[in-house]
Image (cartoon, rainbow, N blue to C red; front, side):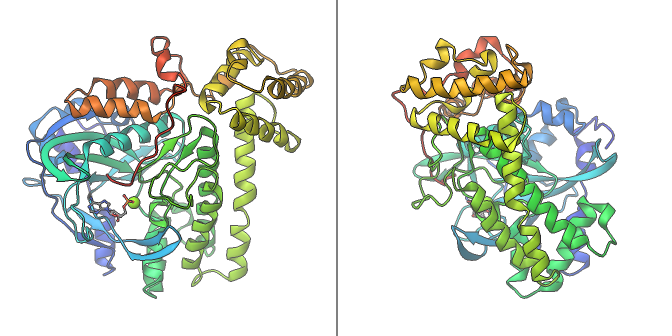
Length: 496
Ligand code: AMP
Ligand code: MG
């Protein structure tokens, strides 16, 4: 897309590729849906970095038209907003039809994809824009705190170079909605290459509508993998790409200590992007059993379980390919998941330790994680400090109660570094993979508390740190510190 110089030229660039395509084919995957504007809206934050990536001038949002549209008032535009249906497995059980209960897609904008050297379409969606045909018993709204959490976490993910949906701006309002208490509603403008979920395919499969499954797969291939368009093995290639990208995604989550919290199949994106930020959390102290979602009574979605849940979800998706691929083919592709995830994870962990990737080094990583867990050491802080010294500095040693075990581990680590002749202090490549800043929950909460009082400056500060989490940001050392001893990592409910 050539640079939009006005907001109206940005709006004019929005097309309806998805809905026009399925309308023409008479496939029931969306409904036209007028969003409900917020009362007394305020456009409180614009994502400058995403504007740059979308080739938009952020200044174009400083106008009445931008405030109106981003607060869900589509009058005086030619847009044809839609909400999309999907189904899914929630907590391991078939939940039937769900759908965009509070998200309305305005359409898609063309964006230059430099690596593919072609234009691709990105969805522009308003989350919290009022009732849709799929709202069921809920109100179609999002509260300010949940939009801030989603905004910050998607930027944190992007800063960590982990695939994710992003958010273009935030609108607060005086519209009141009822959660545990009455709260102000807000809208997040979510942007992503698409919002198609595993549950989108499950929706048609469980209606025995295999033609629509195939049509949706063809649409995904045409939009995202056009080179495969008329190839006979295109469905096989697509399934394989979903399996691999999901393995990569979850390996990356595990490497940064991210816990999604609600890995239902309706929250899994077919492009392997992090999608639907709810009661997520980043690990403070390293605790693989950690469950960040208070509604997850059995720990199905604990940090430790994420890799196997990824495979469970891919098995659920695999069933949707059963009308197109043989059982043997599906199984052989699913078998790629585990080794792909483990290798990717161990490669990242090797980089975090500044050592070469070798299978024989897996034990060094596993031993370290056990020691971090036993000593309740902050995951992010440990690896960052290690990058400065590559040795057991006093700063590092004081994080451990059991001094002897960590000393033994360091002896092994250092003999490996000596063998590899790879000791460098500070290790610049380690500083590029071990973030100084992560979106700790108590830090996100500070941005929320201030924003609820009308002050968005803390949100901006945190945004700057997490968008470039590998930089030093000398004056913000406090934001990189572990959770104080007297505090515990907070768990969150699904309420949003
Ligand atoms: P989530 O847990 O956010 O992934 O949501 C699960 C399903 O409930 C999705 O279909 C959402 O669109 C829907 N949903 C969540 N919150 C609301 C709400 N406040 N109003 C309407 N639908 C909602
Ligand atoms: Mg969801």
